[in-house]
Length: 408
Image 1 (cartoon, rainbow, N blue to C red):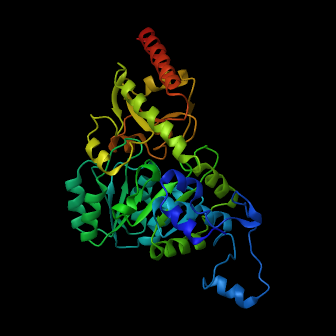
Image 2 (cartoon, one colour):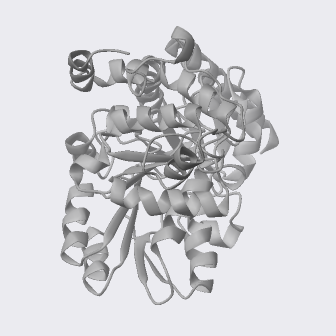
Image 3 (cartoon, rainbow, N blue to C red):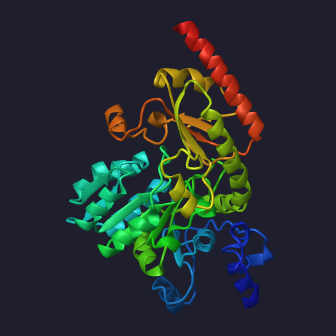
């Protein structure tokens, strides 16, 4: 066990160091240098009174895997360090944490304010599931901060933010909207998946609960699913209780993989983010591209806000192809250094249209109503050499132009 002086130094460490050491400063059993996978569903006690005290939370320990697990606990502690939170609760998927947090804090007769630009699964909760519970949901134009503030003032129990948005990469002014929400007495929840703790810490801007799909950048290798919520202990306690009763607990082996992935987050994200900026600039030069979405571009509508509240612009780029889905179908199969798949944040570059990735749950009509065209393609930029990604995209565009010219 490390001394308190070393613990204090760790808490003052920079984010890249915290990705490695956060949540692990007290050491591991058997002097292991890596977090052990504790695969036991239950934990035994010979002292019945001690068992009862642990069950009531009056002393530390574990009872049953649905309630807590030593490996999962390390992951939760690591996210607390990265997001500067008092407590965190891990779930079996990103949608597991999003839905569980919303269901924990909302009930019949309450009112949610959010935006039209959000992940498709989140949008389904807003459009389909919460109204069944008798919860009123108001979805505003994402770029109309005045309208969002007006709707908050009309009554708001929970404000839900996603910034940057998936897949349109719009930016919300977190501090401005938090101020409006606090005046209305609303709880503020923010999805920080795209920014990651490397670029943005919403809790420091007054957000109450920050969420991550750890399937994405935090795990970083496309081989595990998970979600996590971070906030004060008083807010995380009911979230943990909801998870305990509803059962979306994270498997310890998945937690181990995510912990291992987080340790390279800063290194991975540095390369991914650099390449994303270069690819965004390249896409602006392509005749087949109608528009490019990337907060780092000076032409981005909320570039100034992104500069103010983010430490970097992220590793996701989206663009709209002229000719819509027909052009998408020609371009994507021509890429060599890319998966065409419904994930993001992995070490490999991943391309995909919204209709089969972020908004696969939505109909064509729903996507169009949300401002998502059939020609929109999302790139999750990987850790490959930037020059190779540019060369690959260039040859794919040249081949696509030739194919379309022959077809026309």
